[in-house]
Amino acid sequence: MASAGQMRNRVEVQQAQESADAHGQTSRAWTTIATRWASISSDTSDEVLEGGQQGVRSTHSIRMRSFPVLQADTHRLVVRGIVYDIDSSIHDSAGKQRTTSISATDTGETV
Image 1 (tube, rainbow, N blue to C red):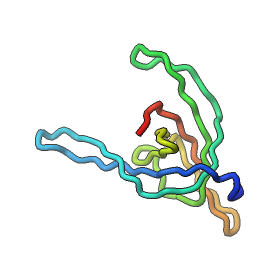
Image 2 (image 1 turned 45 degrees about the vertical axis):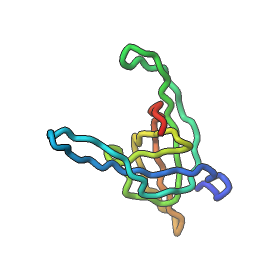
Image 3 (image 1 turned 180 degrees about the vertical axis):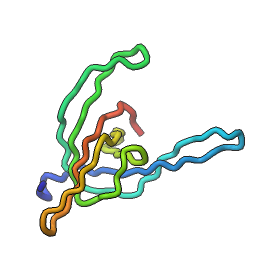
């Protein structure tokens, strides 16, 4: 369990809102549904080739107080303007202390 002092990163939990325009095109907008304190550690970094351009994909472990509803396809995290896609989420409970452990990938996108 991360102590309060280790949870020093402010994380926005965002949820996707999909809507269709007059032409039937679907667009996705993101809405912040919660802001939490979390601890973040870098796990791995890999070089990737996407769209003919070389980049770096970094995977991080993010741990915050209980937030059991996170889903990879409908939620994302934003930390200091950097967007993280959720790869997996595990809800832990040990006594009265509940946490959510998240594996997330830095998308390279900023907001």
